[in-house]
Image (cartoon, rainbow, N blue to C red; front, side, top):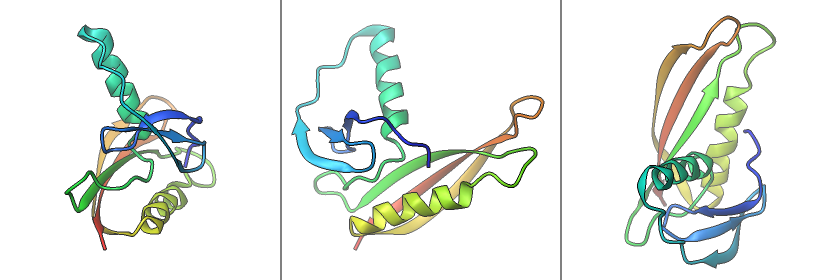
Length: 128
């Protein structure tokens, strides 16, 4: 899994939680008000992309968590490492007390010469 830089991210519950670069910590803060307009929307989309694959608890009152991982297939070489990346995401969420309920994938096709394919894996985890 690609390493996400340490920082404040939405943990999936609407709360900003500190990601130390490896895992969520207990440090939380209220979410900043959303910036208006197109700039605010771009900021929210970027934040969702960063936190989308990070393990997190379900929102209060919910039993499921949805995580999305963008995978890239290599055209040449020894393999993409996608299986180990998916395994890492699944194991981190399992450590929080969830089991994988459903996984779906979608391919966006080739991204150019030697670019390989991009695959989006969407996983639904259920609280045990």
